[in-house]
Image 1 (cartoon, rainbow, N blue to C red):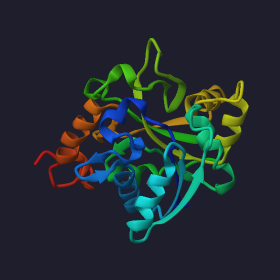
Image 2: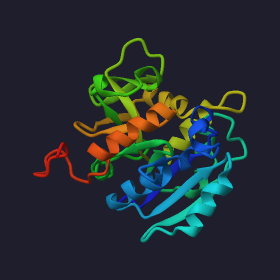
Image 3: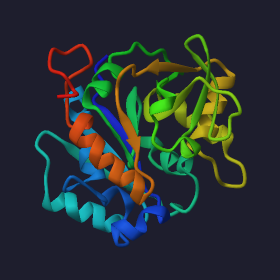
Length: 254
């Protein structure tokens, strides 16, 4: 099955980035002169994704205006507003649940990645009721390990996920291949009107419904702070701008 649809969570207020984004929404912070969100869309598009549903919240009108004025060829954008953007990101995902009825790509509005990793992820076979999380085993290469979401694995399955795991095997890259079962897992995880994406993933993991896909030599970065933004600029020049995979004859280190 070809994956044509993508959900991007871009609703948070990004307080730690505001000194840089002045004080716009974090997905509009510039990396090499282009907003994070535009990089994310352009990196997913070569994987065959054409329809993007973007959940916005904090100053979402600025995001929408930018893309009205700057249309992207071959890309369809739909906007969902989450008035509860101050809550965890699971609520943002749930606000778009009625837009998805078949497998889709789920991305974070502040995670940059190499295009080829998205291409390989959407080619993974996925069973009804499952979610596949792209993970990174290169723990020593992550920019901010304390802030990274950790993942504990048993074979191909994710058995636990969270920022405070005492033992872990890999890191959550913020890239997911999902079936609509994601939304049921999130709904079941809501407590006091709130839930995080990781809460839903733990629900899936407890039922052996969350599998891992190792990105191997792929690069990604979670852009949460001005320091991470500067790191993303460096990575973009060296790795993130390349659509070539690690087996390509073109060296990414060139």
